[in-house]
Every structure is written in structure tokens, then in C-alpha cells.
Image (cartoon, rainbow, N blue to C red; front, side, top):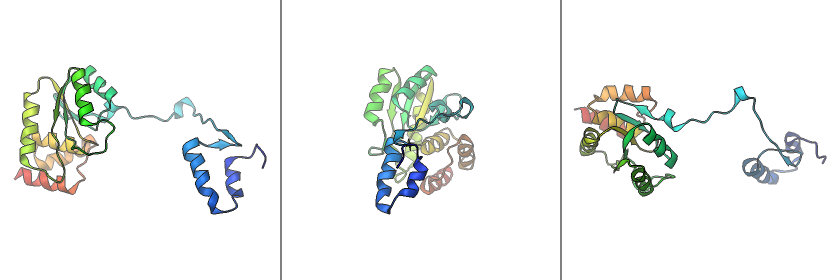
Length: 194
């Protein structure tokens, strides 16, 4: 096999399916290969792949409260620079996350941020949790950032804690990019308004 053959032509040369796992490994873990040298993929400047920044995933629901997904350590620094003084984590123990609640608390407090862990499971929703979140939001000095894993709980429950009616919660959460898709959460919010 000549060195100048491309990967695509090598795929046609595979004698049987036993080679497919090896080829997938090469693609996924070692990158694309041209000949037997690693390929360097470049894109013109106007076609660069864009990464989504944390600040673009953070949405304000009021002048005081913003919501979003699980922050990383560097995101907590960004929150501090943006004037956030309080972080509220709605994640429950055991949720898959790169930053455990104890680590998040240490980083937040190191930055001078107030930190509240208010674990809210979609399986155990109750009005007392919304009341507790409302109290945190009302008594916090400065801006507050509320988060969960992807932002759905944080957005909808923060809107509820802010006194927004359930029908409006669904509409506003959708506009903010955190539509209420979980049926348990939808049902809870409908009951909460009654």
C-alpha cells in the first residue's frame, strides 16, 4: 500500500469487518490519517468552529437573578467579575458533574461568593423547595446565579420562586433557551400555580 493513499481509499481496502474497530480507534483516538501521518485539519478564519462561552449560556430572568448550567471553576471567576455575589446550586448528590458541590463551594467561597446548596430532585419536587429558593433570592445581597445541570430546573424554579405564573414560566423558559421538557417538572409547576 503506497504512503500517498488517503484514508478513504484505505477503507475500501479493508478485507473484512474485523478491521473496523481498529479503524474507528484510529479515527476517534488518534485523529484522521492521510497516508500514515496524522492529518492536520485547518479551517479558514471565517469558518472556524465556534465554542459556546459560559456567559452566552447564562440568562438573566431579572436584574438580580440569572440562571444556567453547571459552571466550571473558571466560570465562577467569570461570574465574580460580572458582579455575581451569590451562587445557588440545585444539583443533587450523585449527579454526573465535573465539579462536585463540595469543590464548587470551596471555589466559590475562595472567590468571596456566597454559596447555597439546595438539592432539588425531579423525583421529589415540593413547594417548600420553591419557598426556600425564594427566600435565598430575596435575602441575597447583589446578583444571584442559580444553576443545575443544564439549566431547566434552575430557570423554571427560579421563575416560580420569583412569582411568575406557571403558564408564563413555560413561555419564558422556552424563550430563554431552557424549555421545560421534563414531564414531572411540568406537572409540578402546573400544580404549584393552583
